[in-house]
Length: 475
Image (cartoon, rainbow, N blue to C red):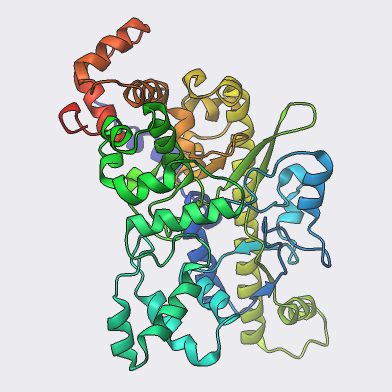
């Protein structure tokens, strides 16, 4: 016998019951799930659509992005006093944030109209702003054309001669503007090819005191062989030890970025290990004075959002007896001020949620942060959700397309915290980097077995492809 519970209970409850999700919860979940780039676009859209919201220009430190106090950067000063290294100062546009760790937030504070939130420029806007400050006005059309000719990787897709012809100007003049473009951040922007992009970054790092003895020579002459892991051939041609070639490869892989525009637009997913120098993290994890870990949710402070002061005054006057607004005007003010407050509150809630989840992850992955990837512990989003008493979908949204800056200066996606197989991949990478003769997948499988790791050969092949390592026959 089948019982229809809806019919049985309807006499007691009247109309059919249904679960309804509040619009505020939907909006909060939407903001939480956005990546940094998507959040930037959402802020730009809200600024365009909501007259009660405005952007305020905030002077920021050119090194770390922190809001300046006069001519002083409080973050950089504090780092110098503490003797700590601002691991992201030179290579990450990382910025401190007034997260929940720095204040006791309440529901009322979430709706404070003076609360400020971050926004960012697009890459094209940033480049035009930076170049506009150093170029004469007559050269700005050339700069705009060059910037418009950049592809998703940040490479210049047009020839200098074609740009000069299109703008009816001198080739040398275009080259001069291109040199200005190539001097801008992110380093490598405006390169014509991969080799030029990497060499530009090597020059930049050498100017900052970070160099590798053979990287320039290998990138200039043996870039293809380096990508194919033909280390023995490179060592033979340059008459240098094999470990020196391996060291140069590690330098190129971890310090250089083949796609300099990656932080601003989608690019090849295989850049995971080479983009850390330039991608902007959502959260920084640093070591405090007591050797404990400190977590900071960061946002760019280049701009800040707030309620337009005029709308703030109008909202305060709504319920006064002498208010001169008609019904439609009152409705307009209430609608847009409320919408702006909700938008700001949702972004604040996004920060608080990310802080709580990151704190929990750090507690569970202390061994990984202390000793490296081989100490990565099995961890699930469901486990984090259970510990915090929140829904698993909230953890998934808060960690999707987000990045963390680790104490060692590496920037990783949050998904790495939940991927124990990374330790296996790390062992595979190390074995292949030190191989005398190219190791086959079976050879790698046997080496893993000696270390107590038992996986299928097809899994070895899958991990190797995910690491962008060629088969033994091509290495």
